[in-house]
Image 1 (cartoon, helix red, strand yellow):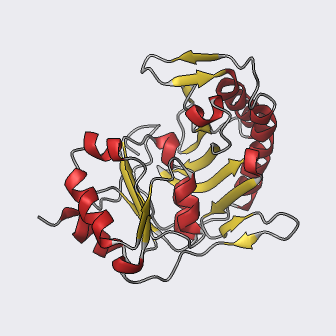
Image 2 (cartoon, rainbow, N blue to C red):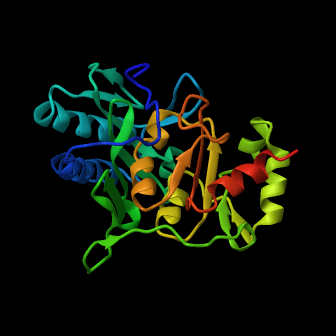
Length: 275
């Protein structure tokens, strides 16, 4: 493990049962949902700017505190890495938290934001929960336990990526044009959007969940940090998908991500990086 805050790989073999950790992650999400929803769309929501000029709200801080408080009681020996309060502990087991992924949506009263909770073991995300309480949706997974989502009024549904095997028939999400421009990849974006059936910039965590549900075949973005992506990795991979960097590496070191339905992964890489 190269540092206490870096999932060094997107996937690797694992032996053991993560059932208890997954159950805890779901309870952490319950506590997080209560904290975040208590201030969602509040007229007097406190908002400030961080050093990097991104927004942070009182709800971001309260939600991360709620998760950390439970972990201090139930997993006191585990490390924690959260977007708002940084790293505590230095162990082979680390909880990685983005209390509100999509703060810009949250502070505008737009319901498309997500709490992301992951457990990484030896630098690999093994447990992931993505909760969108404003629309009543949640997705979760652990290595060896499959990937699941809630169905209002029914039993949880197991997730599986699509079987689409043609780029021309695929639907993709690219986050934003500006992000690809800043990464120097506008030519690759043009090749991608010209080759596929449908392209949209859904943004943040949601398109990865659409991929895991079999509704998209490709999601990619740049400038990602551990807390942006760790919870999404086990959900996508346990649904049968594949996760790499934009250039196909099995690492987050270049701060990019590319997730697909697996069958098209190499084809997408070839399309993106062809001259």
